[in-house]
Image (cartoon, rainbow, N blue to C red; front, side, top):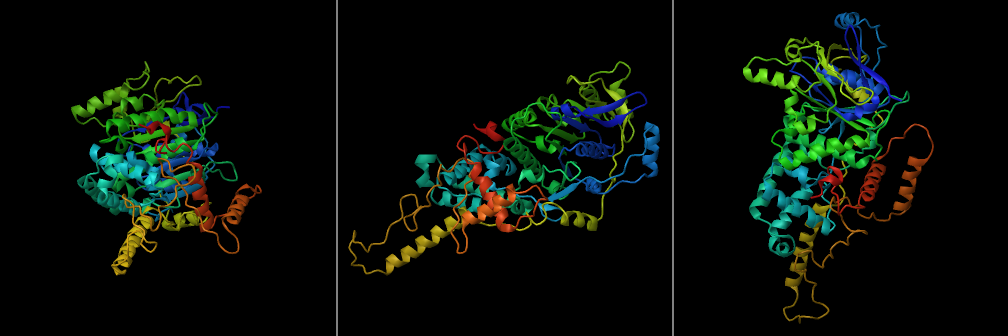
Length: 544
């Protein structure tokens, strides 16, 4: 059954966002300082109250107040009186803080392989030729069972390709040393901007974001993005990767009474700035198709014209705050924004956009039949959580009591491409030294002759790693077999982990580092079916 969420109100009508149409996406637009953040907070808290998990990026730090109950300040009391509303029950939202850099929240990581060459190429600002070389690096790594988990794996793989370009040329195509050098330089720049912390394991498990508390309220996942925003490509690529992971992770559900999750994309113009046409097409497809997974996507930006028409046409729920028209260009933007609404005969929409005060907006939500309502001028209902920031100590307290405390804090560096490639180089060097020390009279073909490396350099000493059962697919998520240990083995460990996961209905137990690594490996193995068809980035729709 649909639940009406009161978001705004005027003297004549309550403007409710209907939960069963919330996965038709939406946007919150307006100039800086007009109240977009409070609108975002009010909508997020409304979703949380009905049990819908929320993800949002906090670009200014203002959203951290959702972890603390609000108070009736003089401004809020005036707003409640103007709206003729009773004072709400002030309460905090269940909040989980995240941070790519691990300072203001739990660390968020993804593997290089999971990100894939398309999004990684966009993050590195590569041209078509360089992106082609990057795709070859992923393909060759997959074919030889080499995991690309972090930046040092990718750098080692690129160096190996450059040194053995002639070996791979016939089967895979030309590998230009200049292109490899350009990728390496871009990779170094991204690493200095935070990529070194972002790429690695344990990788984020989206199930940890899609949680509810003991009262049935959805967790609000707040990503600290004030520092991340200084690297716009990393920021936009990270959020787009999260959307793609949601698309791949969630099953088809069609129309539901309420979303499985709501995703707020703040500073949305960064996603579309300088994006190549092929990427814009994929973003459009993701926004259109992820609706059937029960996910609502809401873009937050200054002007609706920041969003391409193909995406804007899919955003049914809209809140427009004031736009300032100081120049002829601004006036054209205001007129264009007004034309995106279903007109109200009693309102001059273009004139009203320039007249709106702080916390006031033009609102149009979908009705019970999925049709846009006529635009209405209204005041945003204040949220029941605190408006503004919380202290650093309060943030740390929330992090320490979080359901994922201790799960992502310790970085895991298992054997991957870097370790294997550097190991082969060391082994070949040792083999060459041993061969040079042997008696020159050693006859070729004798049983004492050292084994030679094969033509492509993968070598017979040590032998190339056997490909995992089922083949290494295109997303590189292949778990390496663990060695048996005394006093228990992988089987016993997995039995223990799965026993903890499946047994009982009590409170969730925090995982230790070994269990976290094993779960990450199991998830990696489970996603290898069909990996020759999909990379994982943006789901199956990114297959060329």
